[in-house]
Image (cartoon, rainbow, N blue to C red; front, side):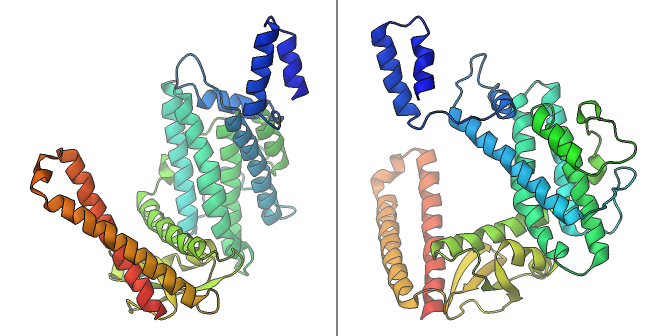
Length: 376
């Protein structure tokens, strides 16, 4: 804070203005401004260029990008440990032909990211470009693929490990090249730490920018993984609702109403276990299972987690009963409003919103009743 104040005092502000500005600084930055580095600042500025010629820079955004840089370091550290000492990448960027669905998905997302960034470069939409590469590294590569690949790297299938190493290397190497224009320093440092191909240039600065990856797009697998991530979201939501620690694995059951849904769950069983912190993922034909919590993912899939021995069942029953009482009251009140003759004068948009609220409340009641039946 003293350094920030000194900058104000060295300017051309009056004493009263300096005092007021210092008070503003103290309010906005009570702990001062953290050192974030050139790369974080450059990326943050580029991500804001869609606003106008003037940028309302939020220092918290710069700090979050600095944390993103730390995430990159940790991701590369994880990758290097699983590539193993002496790893030699393929002589050129290529697939091995036995990639799993999860590998096909991350490669498809890499190809999609390249396409979106290319479109952004052509239209000078740097916000679009930065959003695409940020999402790829953080939300897809780190949060999904790296987590799902842990089971493979901890397993004994050497052929699967070889394929995953190739996929991981390609994603890292090309992901860094895509990110390089915005973060030249950290990407150069991390790129140099990766095993090199003989044909590679001396620096990432003169490496070819990744384009034309359309052959890796796989919209079918992407749609499947969207459903997988939706299942995982519901599993994590239930775990968070009951404050279940991440390290506490739970028995997970899935009720599938269609053959397609059952095939999908079987296909991605290992990924669901890894991302959903599950001891196992089993099929069930039951709609109500004693001692479990349940959420409906979509009309074809419902997921259960076993809570007996993990949470206080009696306390959860009371909580559910209270929740259902409140939701039923809200639903009844809304239905009374809709039944009023005066409601016909309500704008169409508001009527649509109210109908959606009714559907949401009914769905919440149905899910709550299923969970309550499971506890009793």
